[in-house]
Image 1 (tube, rainbow, N blue to C red):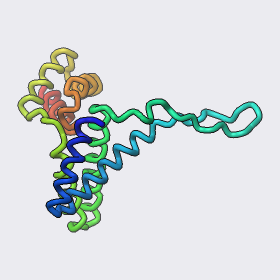
Image 2 (image 1 turned 60 degrees about the vertical axis):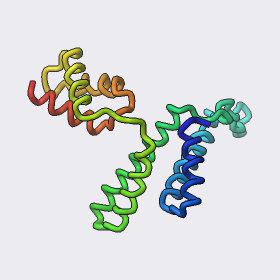
Image 3 (image 1 turned 90 degrees about the vertical axis):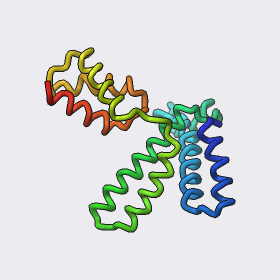
Image 4 (image 1 turned 135 degrees about the horizontal axis):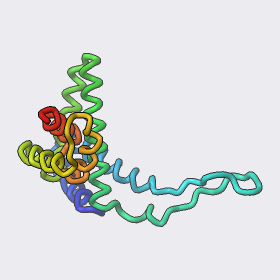
Length: 172
């Protein structure tokens, strides 16, 4: 059990005691996503055996291993991205009630993200990577973005990184 899962377990107990159903439900959904990610470590058969019969699914040794902190962070980010996409879709469909609900869930999930980079830190990082890669204009985004995402190490949203890179490359 990773540190985030332990924190979620404690927060779940607190939210249940406080009667905070929205927080309780979001934490339950996130813990279920962690469990699904752990179960997904099953090795699926590539093909049929020589006799044409289906090969039984082999159980992966990793399946029983708890998620690492990095794996939990990936699942958390996936849930955040899902909420952001839902907000966009509901806004386009004219459903402010659902937008509000998803935004509340998003705020709860974002509280579990590690401290991110500020706008000034992102701009400084972009300038350094643009200099390192020798990027000369917007056409060099394909050089800058992979290095930028790797260097940010999950501490910044890819949209924020992309926007900062576009601004920096537009001035070159």
